[in-house]
Length: 615
Image (tube, rainbow, N blue to C red):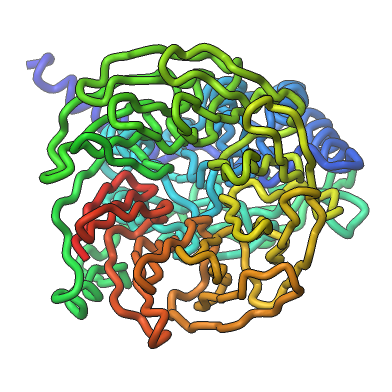
C-alpha cells in the first residue's frame, strides 16, 4: 500500500515546490556589445559585474544576446574573460551581432561559452533560452530548426503547470520570421513571460497574450553610466527594477502576476500563409519541395542531374533534380554557409570546420579536402581546373580542382570572406568584413588594388555583395546604402549614388547595360551601366515591404528574379515594369536563387526548405 501511495505523495510535493516557490532575485542583462572602439562597452560591463558581485542576494545572471559587436573570436574571448569575473553562475545566449558577422558562422560562441542555449530549473521554475540568429546573412531573427528540435525535447521536461520563463534576444513579433513557432509551443505550458533584448530599452510587451519584457542595453549610450535589470520573483508577482552600477537603490518599472497561465487555444492570431500562390497558379508552380533538418544559408547548385546543397548541421547533400529525392549525404564537422560550385564531376564547398571539401558529384565520396586553418564561409568559384575561395583566416586562395593542391595564396585580409568572387578581365574581385573590396591577379594572387568607402565602420563593408561588371566598370552595393562604380584597372570610384537606397543586393542584365538593386522598402531600382555619374534610371514598386536580405537579383529574357526575407520569390517584367508573378516558398529568407535551363528556378531558404519552381 505504501508503495502505491508514495509516487502520488512525491508528485504532490513536486507540484507544491513550484506552486509555493521561494522569493529570489536574478540579474537580467542584454546588449553588452563588447568590442567598442573606445572601450566604453567593456567599462560598462565591468562596472555592472562589480555591482552584481557586491550584492549578496542575487541567485544568478541571464544575458540575452548581442554580447559582442561583430562576433569576432577576439571579442568573444574578451567578453568571456569579463563575464567569468562574476562570482555567481550566469546563463548566456547570442544575438544577431554575435552571429551575423561572425568569422566562425556563430560556432565560436558555443565553443567559448560552452553553449548557445540553456535550460535549467531554479526553485521550481523552469528557465529556458536559445539563439535566434540570423547567421552570416542580414535578415529577420530566426530560431534555427535545430534549436526548435532541442526546444521540443526540453519542453517535455516541463511538468504540468510548472512556471516557465523563456529568454531570447529578439522580441517574439514579426521582427522574427518564425516567432509563432515559439509562441505556439510556449502557450502549451504555464509560461509566465518571455524576456528579450535587442531594442536597447526597458519596455513592456505582449507576444500573442504571453507577457513580454524587453530589457535595456547595458551600454551607457548618451548617459554617464550603463545599467541593467534586477528581477525579483515573489509569491504573487515578478518585479523588474532598474539598477545602475555604483548607485544605491532600485527603481521599479514593471511587474507581472505569477498566477497560472491558461492560454486560449482557439484564439486566432495573424500568421503568414501561402495564399498568394493561388493568384499566379498558371504562371509558376512547384515541381518539388525538400525540407532539410537544419537551416540552409547558401545557394544550392545543379550538376549531373543532382541538386547539391549544405546546411547548418554540416551536411552536404544531393537530391534528384527531377523529383527532389535524397541521393547521398556527406557530413563535415562544421556548419555550411558556403554555396557549392560544381564542374559536372566534382563539387566543392567550404565548411566552418576550416576545410574546403571536394566531393565526387555522382556519389558524394570525398575526393580531397583542403585545410584553410579557419572557418570557410566564402563561396567557391570554379574556373577550369582552378578553385578560388576565401575564408576567415585572412587568406584568399587558388587551388587545383583536380588535385586539391595550392596554386597561390593571398594572405593580407583583415576580416572574413562570406560571399562569392567576381572573375573579370583576369581579376578576382571580392569584399571582406574588413571594410575593403579587393582586386587580385587571378593567375598570381598579387594584389592589384583595394578600395573602401572611407568609413571606419566595419558594418559598412561590401562583404555580402557579389560584384558585377561591364565595360571595364565594377559595381557594388553595401550597407552604407550607396551603389558604387569602380574602374576595374585602377580601383578608383567613377561615381557613387545613394539615390535608390540600395543595401547589399545587386544584379546585372545579361546584355550588361543595366544594373539592378533592391531598396529597403518595396522598390527595385535600375541604373544605367556607365562610367559617367548616374542616378536611378527607374524605380519599380514591387510591393515587397521592408527588405534587407542580401539576395542577389538575376535577369533572363527581360524578366527579373529575386527572393526576399519573407520567403517570396518575385518575377518582374522589365518591359511593363509590373510583377509577372510571385511565389511564396517559405516564411524565412530566400537565399540567392539559381536560374536553370528549361525554365526552372532553384531556391533555398534559411529555414531549410529547398524548392524547384517551374516558371
